[in-house]
Image (tube, rainbow, N blue to C red; front, side, top):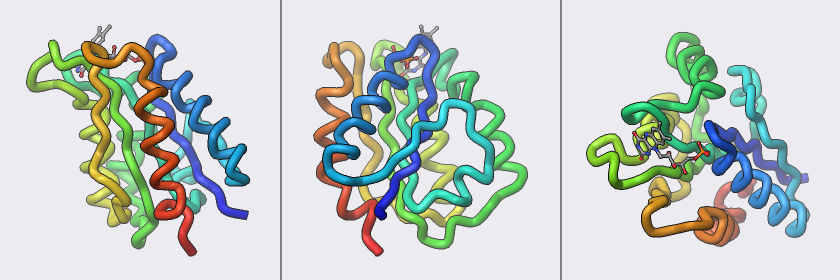
Length: 150
Ligand SMILES: Cc1cc2nc3c(=O)[nH]c(=O)nc-3n(C[C@H](O)[C@H](O)[C@H](O)COP(=O)(O)O)c2cc1C
């Protein structure tokens, strides 16, 4: 069965809610998925396809629940050998240069680990979009085949 591992980085629950909505859509399509909110590096290594849905906190920072995961990946550096991935970043453009910084950090790291991006990173701006899932769910829906191709 095709499967997607969803890594959700969230402070106040927005990105986590979006991840759960995406999971519901994937289930409807017959794609297996798991949402990780406290992942370990092995969860990334074992994933068939990787979807990161993360907000940004502080000044361009990764949310605390993915901080350890991010820094462990940096130090352990498990190569992904072309594993498909996509990153959806929730942010707020009023933060200027640090807009969607948490997502950007993951996009850069997954590229360095030699994952295969199936799309440009999606940026969802809280100033323009009240319900981030309305942007993220259809975006992922279009990527399902690219994410889960054999
Ligand atoms: C204290 C704080 C700091 C934030 N810093 C940033 C930032 O640096 N860049 C950005 O794009 N958004 C920033 N945001 C906006 C959040 O990323 C955005 O509101 C997001 O939807 C929150 O999702 P969450 O509930 O999953 O954490 C910040 C929000 C708060 C409350």
